Image (tube, rainbow, N blue to C red; front, side, top):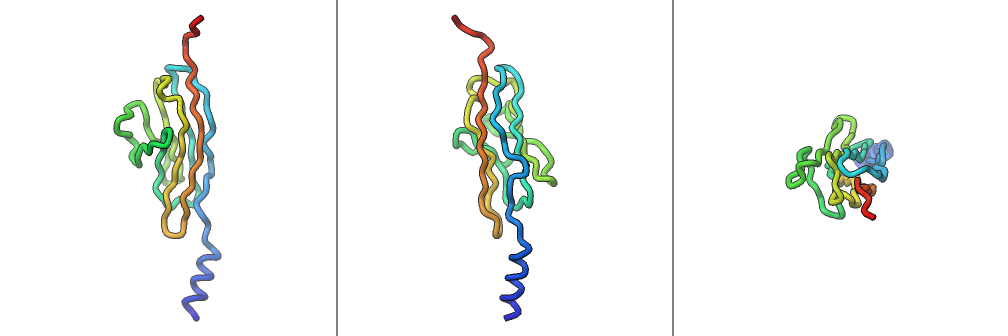
Length: 122
C-alpha cells in the first residue's frame, strides 16, 4: 500500500520533457550561415538532429558533415544546429529529436531549411 502511494505521489510531480524553443524554418542565401534552434525543458533523453530522415548523431561534431555543428548549452537543454557556408545540398527538412528516458516519451520537431541560389540564371 505504501509503495503504491509513493508511486502516485512521484508521478503527480513528474513533468514530461518538452520543447522550450521549437526549430523554425529558415531561408538563407547560398554561402551564408544557418542556425536551427532547439531547446528542451525537463530534458531526460539524448538529443540529435536529423536531415531528411537521416540521423546526424549525438556528438557536437557530425561525422561526414564537416560544415555542421551541434552547439549550445547542455545544462539548459539548448542543442542548436549550425551549418556554415550553406549550399543547395543543405536545402532539406531537419528535425530536432529527443529520445526517451525513464518515463519520458520521444519528442520531435521539424523545420525546413531553404537555401536560395546566389545567382539567377535567365
